[in-house]
Image 1 (cartoon, rainbow, N blue to C red):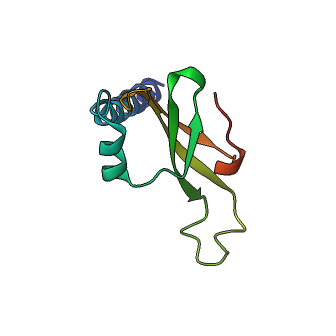
Image 2: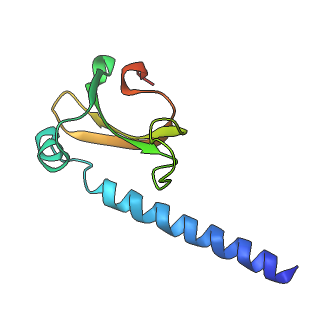
Image 3: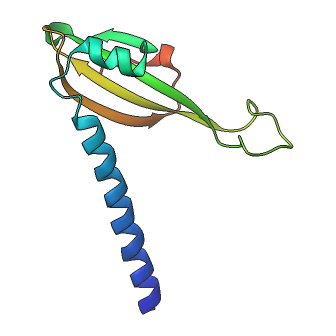
Length: 112
């Protein structure tokens, strides 16, 4: 029983550390210009208007759950998208970002 609790605590700590690393890597973009992130990450897969606040650059990667499965097609298995939303103000400066895992395609995304 104690081993199970220690294992659970270890997993939670490691998970917290990995998401903190991700946050600190993306935090370096806060205050940077829109052009800088486009130069580094490429053209976003979609750009949405964010009413009076500016715009949202959306970067995404489709993940195939059975990509390592040699027996089946990559398209036939379950898949999802990893999205990064980069919020840019009217002065083309990045002020926020968030990441999300979704089933929706880029064409189906709406302003949140």
